[in-house]
Length: 201
Image 1 (cartoon, one colour):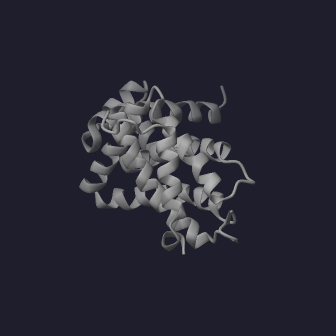
Image 2 (cartoon, one colour):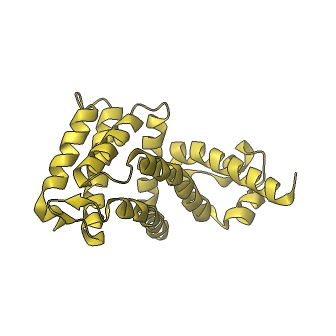
Image 3 (cartoon, one colour):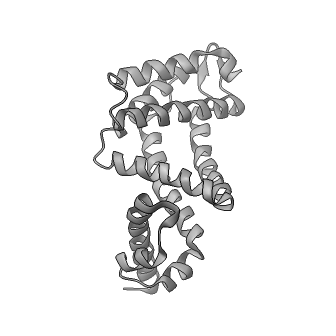
């Protein structure tokens, strides 16, 4: 195995271990436990990520990247805005039924808790999320809507609102608090939100 392959294997092992420990312990997560689960040393964490916060930021990026790639596949080009929002909503609802839905929600809540306890980490987490959301903004920009096309500013406002809607709804689904919130409900709610002219004007 080459040095680059070993480095990537160690990085992957640490991210997988961090997902388990951080989801469970939040800001109290211990680097020595993460390293032990990965069969590595804490020195490997500092070498690869620089710090505990660096590891957490890498974990968030690693967690979000495939999520956004799947969204791009679920929402093809050529759809108008409301059709794209519909496809996005249905994709998001399907993720609520994934085997790892509960652990993903646990990680989201844990990261919020960590951000509250560490403002510097909170700022870095927000930056990492904004970077990933740029892809969503681009996905909605330029789509036809009510005789015109969606501008980047309008797409940004819409993405912010949709993310808030879907996070809240999906937490309700996973916790069993949103009875009847099936794909059609997600799609209808998202379409109603996107249809509001003041939201995207």
